Image (tube, rainbow, N blue to C red; front, side):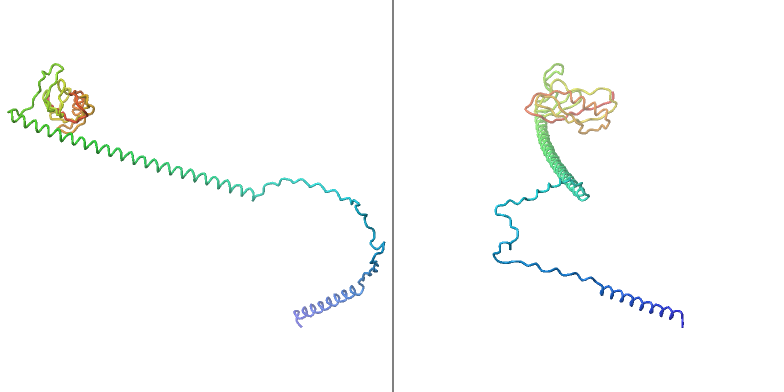
Length: 270
């Protein structure tokens, strides 16, 4: 017989002995269990027997009630983690709504600003186009007047520029009444205007030879309110600036409105 078989037999015998002892233990416990005695019945009298109802409280006898116990004060409970989380969520939601509101207001302000800028640019562009159209019309009118003056001069045998009726020394007007003339080797053109005195000459500090054409804008009082370089044969900035400075000093006769004309300066070596 092997050791494994011996162990199996010993385990089987031990199990049988354990079950037999357990059965005997349960048997003796059931055999000697104490059976509780039954209480005898209590007679109860029914009917109109005076003592059948036992002790009855007399009618209208006050039965004292126990005093109510005072309620324990409710202690405030400490905020739980859930309460803190809820409060944080509400604050975060309110903050997010406030940020969204500010972002909407910022975008609306930007949209209004862009709209205002577009309208301003459109207004400036419309004014520029209107100004250019008025200047083009004025130039066309001046060109037409010059052409007519030249035609009239050719009819009377005078094809050159005239210097007007002034003597060039006093304050009298000098220049062609149709709006062009020459002075000191330089010429000017301004429709319907004459020049007061003589045409201002540039400073003699230049060392260039050629021509500078200056476009002038003259107000109703006859003052030059702007002067810009419009062309010529000289590109030297210093010489051009001398021409602009001289043109701004010119004085013309009065008119009804602003007008645009030109002054041509001829520079020669000193």
